[in-house]
Image (tube, rainbow, N blue to C red; front, side, top):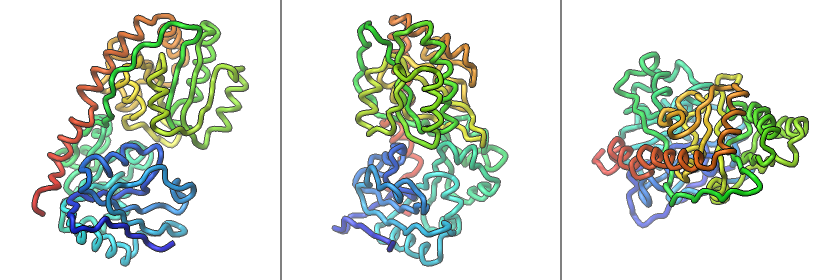
Amino acid sequence: MPERHRSHGGGVTHPLGVLVPEVGVLSETFVQWDCNQLLPGRTVVVADPPPAGETVLDGPSWTADGPVLHLAPEAGDPPPSIGQQAAVERFLQTHGVRVLLVQYLDLADRWFDLLQRLPVPVWVRGHGADLSARLDTRYSRLAALAGVMVPTHAARDRLVPHLLPQHLVHVVANHVAIPDPAPPRPAGATVECLTVGRLVPKKGHAGLLHAFAAAHTRDPRLRLDIIGEGPLRTTLEALVAGLDLAHNVRLLGARPPRETLARTARADIYLQPSVTGPDGDDEGQPLALLQAMAAARACIVTRHAGVTETLTDQQSALLVDEDAAAPLTAAITALAADPTARHRLGLAARHVAVNHHSHTAAREQLLHMLKPEAAP
């Protein structure tokens, strides 16, 4: 597959460059925002997809609005060649890029030889697995770059002081659009629960299903939708059948963002049962949870990594320990029985989202740090 270079032309400079593994991964709405919304109309993107990447195999679910340099995926995913490095350097120079933002620490490590010699500041934005399961001592060399952004203080503590100096690591909370608050659902024959996330171990679906099965025996009105796709689908389908939940739990697969947001707004209870995966993979700060908070949904969340840093138990969410089936069952049962508590927790969660996780606040913080309009 040859390299493809799409440019909007017209002599417009694009002071912000974003280096990503792939353009168009459905679950990476945070990458999409950085590419299209952080500096609209003034951003270029470089994509370095692995040969078995999601968009390589199935095609993209979204596109970047500005000029894009797609590098060709190669068998075995070798390090960037001299020719690829030169192509990226020319692309950034042609479009007048003044600062480069790299998505994921491991991608920055992969491209480090080029990044360290670029004549513009290079920032790195970490998210989840790159700050846990894929964390590597080699990342200490990223200290040669302008700085590293992480979504939580827990993630920051993994880097400082073991790998990077304190002044280079900055907490930039994940952020979402803040819609009008969804009204509480009227009491009815069902209590609708929802969780959104890839079907991978760290999302905690298996433990959730066991806890939900126990809650359902206490309150048969309970229903659960699971949005997401991944390698555990067959295992979870078997578990749903084994727990006799086929009529009360739906595995909906990956859904478009607009549909996911609509289903979130209709839920009575949002569940974020995250756990540390067997390979050490942890969450960063799940956007689906922040979207549920912004929609004023009552949330039940495990105390996992930095997920709960902006939430307070009994005030803005119900917090339970990881892999604690009985407390999770009790929390689901309690909220199912108490619409007043659901409404109160939902409004408090929305207040947290508005004050700590809005696009507006994040854009101001990011542009202050990146300074894309400044002279190189």
